[in-house]
Image 1 (cartoon, rainbow, N blue to C red):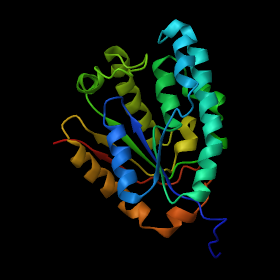
Image 2 (image 1 turned 135 degrees about the vertical axis):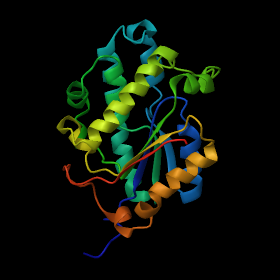
Image 3 (image 1 turned 90 degrees about the vertical axis):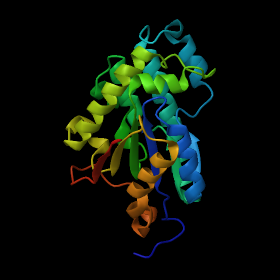
Length: 238
């Protein structure tokens, strides 16, 4: 079928992972290199004050309200992402739906509970996911002076975030049915503990090279979630 402006859909690259692992820098570098729209999730301004109010600012005081806030932001932002995929050539986001599963798990919510709130299968499906991790102590040192830190950016929480990020990545690799919306999406895991931003960018470019050079990656609509073979790679510092 011949591609039309109406059928063309931009690829959506998600850069996810540990706080302090280099997501912001990589998103900026990728959007500058490929000319795409860069944005961050959560997207809406209501999220930060709502989380500060939820549980009186505690990380575990009101998990349900925290998860509902993130789910509301995700579902509202999904409308924008759907529009942007019709108007832009490429989307690059800092975080994606998958982060709800990681943060929820740290707070004690199961993947099934997160999926029930998000109804992830109804949302836009990313074209590729780049998972960034780093040793939790190293990552925390990178962000500890950030005046805009949120309530989750503490060393104990980030240690659990690191563990849950790896657990989720391995579960998707193994085809875990609880993570069906993410099965079949090309992904890579990059450990940035001993990598500078330039090296992280090189690793990400190498991973994305085939995806962004294939016309089908630009024009294809979201595909049904399946357990087809996945293109996976793990990149760690030497």
